[in-house]
Structures are given as C-alpha cells and as structure tokens.
Image (cartoon, rainbow, N blue to C red; front, side, top):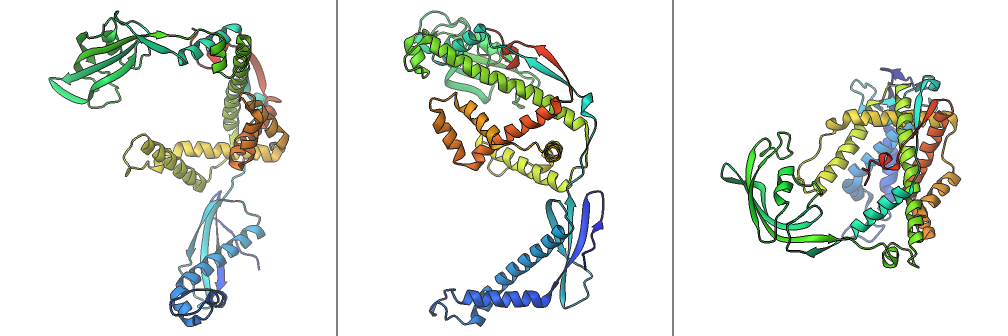
Length: 435
C-alpha cells in the first residue's frame, strides 16, 4: 500500500513511516555478531570476545546506527515512489500517538522544490556596453605598472603630492589621548587620500624634522564611534620625506613583466591582450546582471524556508570566518537571521536559473568549459600548466563550469529580449578615472 502524503502548504509535505520493531532488533543482532568477529577487547583474542559483552559495550551505538539507516531508507523509498523533489533536510520525529507496540512510527515533515513560472521575456530590455580598448587605455595601464614598481629617494625639500612620508603623530580630544590617535614610524603617501583631508593637508609642505600642530574634525559617520563627530588636536612630526622615482619603460622594465626579449611592443601587446580579456569579462558581467535581474522580476516562485535557512547558515559562517581572519573576537559569531533576506534572493536565483537550464537544456558542455579555461590561461606564462592544474581538482574546474552555464542562460534570454547597444569608454567600464 502506498504511503499517504499530506500537503500542509504549497511546499510543505508530511507522511508517517512505519518500521517493525522486529526488523530493528534483527538487524541490530546481526551487526553485533558481525562486529564480534573483529572487535578487540582487553583479555580476549580477536574474534573470541563474547557476543553478550560486545552487545553490552557497543549495543546502544549499533542500535542507533540501525535506526538511522532504517529511517533514511524508508524515507528515501517513499520519496522515490512518489517522485518527490525534497528541498533541504527533512524533520523526522517519533509519532506522538503511536499505539502499535510492534512498530516504530516516525513523522517526516519536509519541503519540496517549488514550481517556477516565467513571464514573457520579450518584454525585457537589455543594454549591451560597446567598448573598445584604445592606445590610451594601454598607456594608462603601463603607467599603473610603473607606479607598482616605484621606489623612493629621500629629499630635504618640502613634501608634495606623491611623496612618501614617515611620521610620528599624537592626537588628543579635550586634552585626552584616544585609541588609534597616535603612531610611530607611520608611512603615508601624499595624494592617496587614505587619511582624512585635514591630515593630508597638514602633511603637505613638511620637511624632514619639521613638526606641525593642527585640528581635525572627525565626520559624524566616522567608523570609529568613540571619536565620530568630535574634534581632535594632533601634533605631526616628519621623520623622513622621499620623492617617488618611477622606472623607465625600457627593456629591463619589459623583462620584469615576463617579456623574455625585453621588447616594449611585446609588452604593449601583452597588456592589450589582458585588457581585452578584462573588457570581455566586464561587458559580460554588465549584461549578466541585467539578465538575472530581469529573470528575477519575470519569475514567480515560493522559496523553500529550509533552503533559505541553510543558505543563511552558510553565509553567516563565511562572514564569521572572514571577521575572525581580520582580527575579530574569536568567540563572536554572525547571526544567520541577519543574512536571511540575502539568502532568500540567492536561493531564488539559484532555483530560477536551475529551472531555466533544466527546461531548455542549457547545461555547460565540456568543450565550453575547456574554451573558457584556455582563454583565461593565456594570460599566464605557461598556459598548459594552468589548464592542467584546474583539471586536477573538480572544485577548481567548477568555477569555469558555472561561468559557461551563466553564458548559456544569458545567450538564451538575449535571443528573445529587446537589446540596445551603448558605446562606453573602457575606463568607465572598469570604474577607472581617466589619467
């Protein structure tokens, strides 16, 4: 007789499982006898330990394992028989009003995956960035590479934009020192804007050995709550002032970036190739974000609570680990409830994309994955080694499988959506200010 499935809500289901007591007892006895053949106990040779002693020592553990296996097998059989797609983990509890002493009864409560319905994608409007990598973009990138190789030369003149300063400073609020308000041998680069404007302004024009006293008003929304909205007085001492010396773009510079023969045109070609890869990646991201937002707004589904809870737990654990790695308190943990709204959206998008892939056969092919990997590997000195490294671990390869699947989804939607092209400078695409 088939098991009766009770529908509690749109997604929630419940049914009762019955497991004969005799089945549990028989399987427990069988496993204990099997264990007795190999178990080691003091005073007995292997295989000679009395079954009663094995049962006394290991019986509760074995019985628990038998129960767990029987319940899982029974649950799986009902799920398979009724072709249920279980979302998350079921909640399995002993039945409170069970009457038959010859059977164990358990109630399984769980959610199933929702139906996803899509509206007409022809109403979607997608704007495609049209971007060209120019000689100016290559030159700007070379300048960035020069700055990465900067060295500094001590000078006696007053500090100016771009100079590196090594300073000591002491700050007080109402004559009292405060946490984070003082430092020794602190390094700062003028113009990087990592310090508050008043601090940068005070450091401008200082010579080695000079001091300056100035006031600084912390913004009301400053991250340091103890000083936010307050005014501090600082004494700043310049211990060293150094000017930046940028390398010349020459043969040695090119060799430093992997151009074996030092050819500058070869370096420019390499830079342009990397910028083209970045351009392609960023353009796809812009289009993908629009497509996914459109999929969300043109889809209807109920998100299983079990999946939201599991994703919120995962996000909280990741955030806690990141917090601790940055010096946070070891005994503090992020609350999963904080992440539930974001988790709900993640799960929803996963279900939407999954249904679109399943119903339209958009799975990533091995050839697509390999093509993406080959393209990415070209930016390395030994591409074949990079490709081999990814294929050594399925978890690494899954990154490119996910990208290929996203491309298939995006291409599928673009075939029917309304699209328009929008020319855009490369610097704007990557969020970079023109030099």
